[in-house]
Length: 469
Ligand code: ACO
Image 1 (cartoon, rainbow, N blue to C red):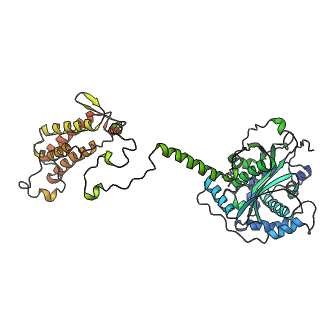
Image 2: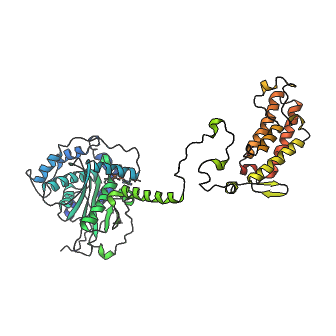
């Protein structure tokens, strides 16, 4: 039976290996992060095969084995794997990365393996591959120490393997079966091959590790001393700096250690860690199904043929889907953000009130002292060249016809635009100093004076633009 092990270790070169045990010893590593990035040569072209090839030269027999060691032979087999291109990750979100790795798993390119040192060639081969990833990624960790922890028979590892041979990342953790800490796993090492980092492998690896730890070892918690530079990664894997597990269930079992940050992760009893995208897709479909029961936003109507045959304004309620979506004239007028002061009353801009207001504006204009030249269309007989210069004429009589149709001016802006056109035409034909235009200008100013004083709280709130002459 395994008793509590309490050892304060500080890794400095080989001293850590001498300290023994399953501690992470990350403090030495954390101090040398910057050097790690420069000193540790990258995997050739990002190819983890290179790390396996390197492994052949560097591989340490895990337990004093020699050249005939089956694990070493397995490592040599691994070296024959063909190079692989780096993954292309254009859409670098959590879920897209996870989904892409799942695709690769389904295609057989990737797999996550749960292994322990059971003496088989296969486990030895994979563990040596993992040892080489750790040796590269945690360069300040003595290789002997890494070997000892990885090949310790009570320790478990989860490795990500490409093309059945290439170990590109892994996590090694320790369990405490038969003790008060039986529900706990202590993560000793965690790494992904350098040139593959930050493309989602670390997340995939952690998800698989949680899955296997729960299914194979019955674990409910992970604790780890995270290197300070890796705290961000562990946080994103749901590790927190608050330890909720009762102290007597972990204290004295995991290594006490100077440096790093103690972090905990609770392993959910039912979450499908290895298939989050599937779960989320199902949740999304269920949610969308529910939403569709109460909304019509997903119903797509065909385009409107109305204007193909030159139709005029189309009442909004005749647009397919508008009424089904719950629109009504009243609802459409509510929340317009403005009101109209007319005849001593303050009114919402309903269709009727807008119409009343436009009639009010029109009558005022028609009665204005300067209105006479603008009451009816310009006579082509009286002014023969008028329609060669003015191609889009407008006058108060035409505006009255349009207003009377009740279908033309569906907004105040449209009404004001016709008024503006009438005045601008006058300016265009007569010039800015002509008495007709000066009269039109006075008419225009009177028109906007009523507009400004009648629209509450102001024109801007109503979305009405006053075009400058
Ligand atoms: N610091 C902060 N955030 C990080 C770090 C980091 N060092 N590494 C990754 N992340 C973030 C990523 O940006 C990503 O965030 P996002 O989802 O918002 O985009 C998220 O963590 C997941 O990133 P992955 O791509 O899934 O992780 P990656 O494949 O890079 O693996 C790991 C992370 C294992 C830390 C890797 O970078 C590594 O091997 N580093 C060197 C070795 C190391 O430091 N190991 C941990 C030592 S502590 C211990 O072993 C207990």
